[in-house]
Image: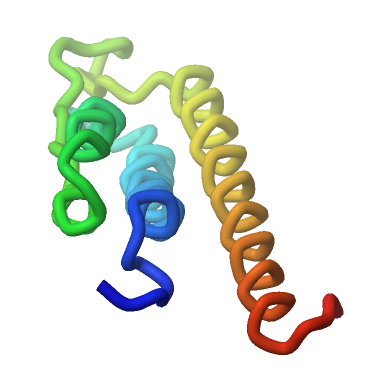
Length: 122
Protein backbone atom coordinates (compact mmCIF):
# COMPACT_ATOMS: atom_id res chain seq x y z
CA UNK A 1 0.00 0.00 0.00
CA UNK A 2 1.18 3.53 -0.73
CA UNK A 3 1.89 6.22 1.79
CA UNK A 4 -1.28 8.25 1.72
CA UNK A 5 -4.03 9.39 3.99
CA UNK A 6 -6.31 6.49 4.95
CA UNK A 7 -3.72 3.86 4.05
CA UNK A 8 -3.06 3.21 7.70
CA UNK A 9 -5.26 2.46 10.67
CA UNK A 10 -4.49 5.72 12.48
CA UNK A 11 -5.53 7.95 9.59
CA UNK A 12 -8.61 5.84 8.84
CA UNK A 13 -9.64 5.96 12.49
CA UNK A 14 -9.30 9.73 12.64
CA UNK A 15 -11.45 10.24 9.54
CA UNK A 16 -14.03 7.64 10.58
CA UNK A 17 -14.28 9.23 14.03
CA UNK A 18 -14.86 12.66 12.51
CA UNK A 19 -17.57 11.34 10.18
CA UNK A 20 -19.32 9.18 12.77
CA UNK A 21 -19.29 11.77 15.53
CA UNK A 22 -20.75 14.32 13.11
CA UNK A 23 -23.51 11.86 12.18
CA UNK A 24 -24.11 11.26 15.88
CA UNK A 25 -24.56 14.99 16.40
CA UNK A 26 -27.28 14.99 13.73
CA UNK A 27 -29.27 12.41 15.71
CA UNK A 28 -28.80 14.41 18.90
CA UNK A 29 -29.91 17.69 17.34
CA UNK A 30 -32.93 15.92 15.83
CA UNK A 31 -33.82 14.62 19.29
CA UNK A 32 -33.48 18.10 20.75
CA UNK A 33 -35.66 19.55 17.99
CA UNK A 34 -38.35 17.00 18.88
CA UNK A 35 -38.15 17.51 22.63
CA UNK A 36 -41.84 18.48 22.82
CA UNK A 37 -43.15 16.12 20.12
CA UNK A 38 -45.67 13.70 21.65
CA UNK A 39 -44.60 10.06 21.32
CA UNK A 40 -41.19 10.90 19.84
CA UNK A 41 -38.49 8.34 20.67
CA UNK A 42 -34.92 9.59 20.98
CA UNK A 43 -32.27 7.96 18.80
CA UNK A 44 -28.53 7.72 19.14
CA UNK A 45 -25.81 6.55 16.78
CA UNK A 46 -23.67 3.99 18.58
CA UNK A 47 -20.35 3.31 16.87
CA UNK A 48 -17.59 3.09 19.46
CA UNK A 49 -17.70 -0.71 19.90
CA UNK A 50 -17.83 -1.31 16.15
CA UNK A 51 -14.90 1.04 15.64
CA UNK A 52 -12.90 -0.64 18.39
CA UNK A 53 -13.49 -4.08 16.82
CA UNK A 54 -12.57 -2.79 13.35
CA UNK A 55 -9.26 -1.41 14.63
CA UNK A 56 -7.95 -4.98 14.90
CA UNK A 57 -8.74 -5.60 11.24
CA UNK A 58 -7.06 -2.58 9.68
CA UNK A 59 -7.93 0.61 7.81
CA UNK A 60 -10.35 -0.92 5.31
CA UNK A 61 -12.49 -2.33 8.14
CA UNK A 62 -12.34 0.97 10.03
CA UNK A 63 -13.67 2.88 7.02
CA UNK A 64 -16.60 0.43 6.76
CA UNK A 65 -17.94 1.22 10.25
CA UNK A 66 -21.36 2.83 10.00
CA UNK A 67 -22.61 2.50 13.57
CA UNK A 68 -26.03 1.38 14.75
CA UNK A 69 -29.04 3.55 15.45
CA UNK A 70 -30.36 2.88 18.94
CA UNK A 71 -33.85 4.05 19.89
CA UNK A 72 -34.47 5.02 23.49
CA UNK A 73 -37.44 3.03 24.80
CA UNK A 74 -39.95 4.28 27.32
CA UNK A 75 -40.73 7.89 28.01
CA UNK A 76 -39.48 10.67 30.25
CA UNK A 77 -42.57 12.86 29.83
CA UNK A 78 -46.30 12.36 30.16
CA UNK A 79 -46.74 12.61 26.38
CA UNK A 80 -44.65 9.48 25.67
CA UNK A 81 -41.56 11.37 24.51
CA UNK A 82 -38.22 9.74 25.44
CA UNK A 83 -35.96 12.76 24.91
CA UNK A 84 -34.08 13.81 28.04
CA UNK A 85 -32.83 17.36 27.56
CA UNK A 86 -30.04 16.86 30.11
CA UNK A 87 -29.01 13.52 28.62
CA UNK A 88 -28.97 14.87 25.07
CA UNK A 89 -26.97 17.94 26.04
CA UNK A 90 -24.39 15.69 27.74
CA UNK A 91 -24.24 13.45 24.64
CA UNK A 92 -23.86 16.50 22.42
CA UNK A 93 -20.95 17.84 24.48
CA UNK A 94 -19.25 14.43 24.41
CA UNK A 95 -19.77 14.09 20.66
CA UNK A 96 -18.43 17.59 20.01
CA UNK A 97 -15.33 16.90 22.11
CA UNK A 98 -14.72 13.67 20.21
CA UNK A 99 -15.10 15.47 16.88
CA UNK A 100 -12.77 18.31 17.89
CA UNK A 101 -10.17 15.83 19.13
CA UNK A 102 -10.33 13.96 15.83
CA UNK A 103 -9.99 17.23 13.89
CA UNK A 104 -6.90 18.15 15.91
CA UNK A 105 -5.41 14.70 15.27
CA UNK A 106 -6.18 15.05 11.54
CA UNK A 107 -4.53 18.47 11.42
CA UNK A 108 -1.48 17.05 13.16
CA UNK A 109 -1.28 14.22 10.61
CA UNK A 110 -1.50 16.71 7.73
CA UNK A 111 1.21 18.85 9.30
CA UNK A 112 3.47 15.81 9.65
CA UNK A 113 2.89 14.88 6.00
CA UNK A 114 3.78 18.44 4.95
CA UNK A 115 6.95 18.33 7.00
CA UNK A 116 8.00 15.08 5.39
CA UNK A 117 7.08 16.06 1.84
CA UNK A 118 8.10 19.71 1.92
CA UNK A 119 10.80 19.55 4.54
CA UNK A 120 9.30 22.29 6.66
CA UNK A 121 6.52 23.06 9.12
CA UNK A 122 3.94 25.80 8.60
